[in-house]
Image (cartoon, rainbow over the protein chains, first blue to last red):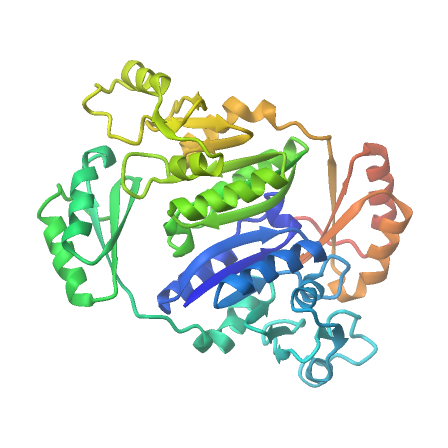
Length: 231
Length: 231
């Protein structure tokens, strides 16, 4: 399963906020065996949201959108997603009922927008906040407030179901430039992929869909490089 | 000036790394008056890098690419950028000379890749590391290691030159849903844009290209909302 993540928000594009939501979603999706193919941040503009969501839903199995839900003028994600799928943005009876009953809001207090979802979308309740999310045509629309996003993701997590993958890391004290041949060799000998991440030492990350193959590859590689102490 | 940022790396898409590079670049570009229109993370694959960079260079005034430079098999950014602009990836004499003279590397030690740039690109020296960057057709290719990226960005920062923008923030204790009308009003009365960011209180961020207009708008808004104590 291949997925794209779209994070909506001028505050991300201005560098006011570090995109920890993207990292959290990528981690959770990867743990479920899903391949995250793109993470893209777009401004709070309907046309930009619609265009990127539409492109990704055509290309990937699902799209997770986060941010830009709520009552204010810069909360345009639901309008963008509705445009992406060619549906109207309509007052959603279930959203209205849910907010009134569970959110403790009166109908008068509910600002426009909060209760509007793309027509015939499935509402996702926001157990940690106010604005509901939605699912429509493989697009999962979640809030941008991290606690709200995380709680809502768990409601739909089972929809993201990829092949199990296994990971092992090998930390070496050798410089990255010295490792080129051995990294090529381990991928030639075993059905694994390898990433190398320099930092304090070089972290070699092996990924495979077969746990036994992974263990053999990691053992082989550990015998080929100078190991560094793990923190 | 409108710019896109492309961050390359499977480690970002797996959620192993939070994309602080993107936030840093977005902050620096915004401070220079540049509008960041997209921040996109792509995998370590030549075709994906080439496709996204090519799309963005057609649409925006410049593209900043970071990550995936270096000697190992998963460092494919230069190949992707070369493909995006339809040029060969060639051994760059200046890169080779710079690495030998300033990097203290002998020609033998220089792994393939590190010295290869898109044909006729301008090399950017890496004053904090090894792999050089490049500029080609409005595409600025920087390393992914934060210290290296930051130092190299400063070498080209003057190329990013937008209209000056001014920012003021107003912190209110009112709930976001109560503010809808006043946020609409401030944008109707003044030539400013407003973002609202709920958290501990709601942070209202006003942006304008005219400093006087901004001050008037902020003063007006402060008179209209219940102010919260700043941290």
